[in-house]
Length: 287
Image 1: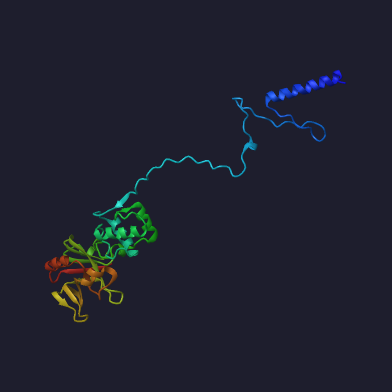
Image 2: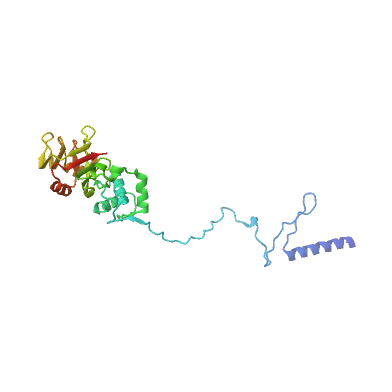
C-alpha cells in the first residue's frame, strides 16, 4: 500500500527524470556507497550547442592540419661585381685567385677578357652555379672560401705593377732608374719620367748588382757568350750585366729569374728605350 510519503518520493523522482530529459543530462548510477555519482560537466556554447571536450577526439593519430602556404617570391639575382671589359686591381685579384684553383693559367692582367670569362664559367659550372661568365657576389664568395689572399707578385706575375717614387740619384741627367722593390724601370731625363716598364732581376745566386753605373756598350742583337741565350736590345752597364729584352720573362713572368741582368718583357717598350739611350747615360739600381 502506497503511503503519502512513498507517493511523494515517486513524484520527486519523476520530476527529476523529466528535468534531466529537458536539460540533456544523464542520471548517474549510484556509487558503491549508495550515493549518486556527480554528472560530468557539460559546457554549452553561445548557440546552445554542447561544446566538444577532449573525450570527443577520435582514436588514433590526429589528422595533420595543413600549415598556411607562405607566399612564394623569386629572390633577386646576386649582384654582378665584375664582367667582361672591367679593369682594375679587383679584376687582377679575381684572376690571381682563379689561377690558384687552376681555372686560369695566364698571368693576371687586370682586364676582364675572354679568358677570364671562360675561367669564371668553368668555375661556376663545376659548382652548380649559373654559368654566366660574370663574377657575381655568390661566385666571388665561393672563390674566396677556396683560395688565399694573393701576394704582390701573384697579382703582378706578368708585370704591370705601379712604380715606387724614384731614387734621389735618378733626379738629374739622363738615367735608367731601376727599382728592385717595385721591380720597375723608369727612363728619366732631368727628373721627368718618360717611360716605365716592368723588369726582372737575377736570382739569389746571380744577383743584379746595385749602385750607380753608366751604359758602356749597346748591342742590338746580342747573344750571351756565357749562357748562349739571346739578349736583344742589350745595354751593358756593369761587366756582363745589361738591361735587355727577355723572351723568357715575357712567357713566364716572375716565375723565373735572370743571371744578373735587368730583364724587360715588353719588347716594343725596350726597343724604344734602346733607340733613346746613349753610351754614358747613367744607370741607378736600388732597393
